[in-house]
Image (cartoon, rainbow, N blue to C red; front, side, top):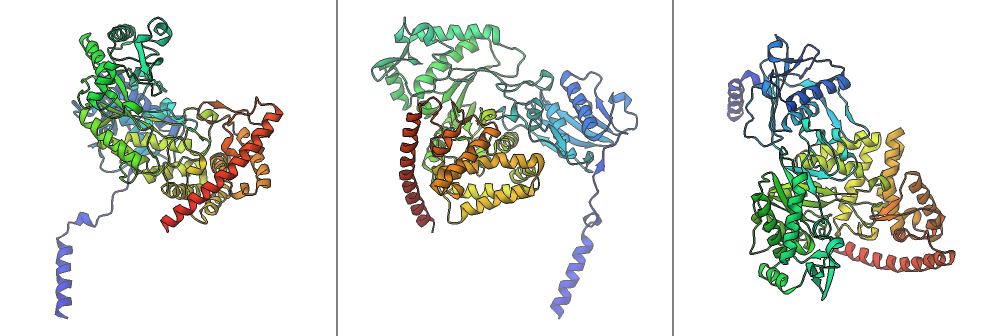
Length: 633
């Protein structure tokens, strides 16, 4: 009994010692009202003025708030939203795009650094306190809130994680989408200079032997300028130890910069990159340099460094020369280091995207991680070219949602300064699966790799798919688990995409049925479009309504009709398809083989041979599935 009394007394003393603020109710956020003003400095620069005007426009359009833009001496006693230097907050020395949001005595400060900081601050303010989102290009900026709600204390500081952020998906090409979601690459979008412009590539990729020292110009007269590969000269790569090649490329680069250079840009990039093949030069000089470096990057980086030194000597201080660490040049060299004005773009094309890159049990990813670490130690400006779709079967599922965030964090933690996320760049002809969701999540991760990923995904799903969103999320989670049981690259057949356990395909079907019954209108159209990818996978695997070979013809007929209704004219990279009645007889695995130009007899032979081949592949698939289940169980 004494012990109990002692405990009660001690607890009472502890309670009495706590400050009264510990029991006070949290102050409710205060709404921004039309009594407020937007404040700029009398000598506001173009970036501050543009940010103030954009805030004024969005407050008016979304919330009906008509706030005037005034200078500091016109504020009087009104609540002020202070933009840029009017806030009186020192942002000097902070990286371009950084911002601070901070409560003031009678207002709030939105202060940004460099060319992008003030617009970034305005869009962050709208998102954090106005609930504003730009989920897709078509929807534009929306908000579920009735107004802007300001907490009692605001103190937010943000610094961009990457200096260059880009992706080639559909919606991110839009200017408003890019400003809200932090994209600044200039290949697919145009951002006005007053909002910071873009980070521009003067040339982007595969430029050697095409743009520079072009085979069309030189190969016939000077084959020695080009790679000696397997005993023959090939016009699709250069011999990088040939002095004439160096002089030609140096001259062409400097000539291009004479008209393409923007002295006012924060950064311009000119790409000197290999072609998209493995025809590297094997002449004596190139072989010796590569062997000395333990990598074909030896010749590439030595060549690029020479050009970079010439560019720096010509006074182009804001120009960086970019090159690839791609396929045969992916391994870092041992004897040469990139010049300070050289950017190395490391490409993840060989990787597995059903496991995080730092998964030690995934062989392809373990090899990539070693290259990433080596280049990170070697290069002061490392960029990443990453991949986010299945180029062999783009209409089917690509289950990478379980690794997107961790992979982006890995890039940042290994000092990558720029990221390009290549995806379904032909999505307008192949818009199935979750293109808009993936584009949005990629953009938010480029903006902040440590964001609340689940909240961002769920928020998008609710807005895009309506009341059936939870079933869509359940399907995504299920397929992520099924994909993690195997390895998924970017050139996979559908049968290699998942390893389902008994009952899981039926569960996936149930999720889609529930989502369809719960959604309506535009949201239901989104559900039906995304379900096409699941139906395509089932057709390829021969399950569900496609299990019976006779009924499968009718199911494929309906799938063909729905593909046509939703504007699908491509099912893989590089091939246009004119879908017609013949496709219902062809196993879905072979739809990439264009049969439009075949004669009737050729079509019949093709159909018979492909159905026989599919039966064989089904047998191999189910043998693999049985082994996987034994391993899991």
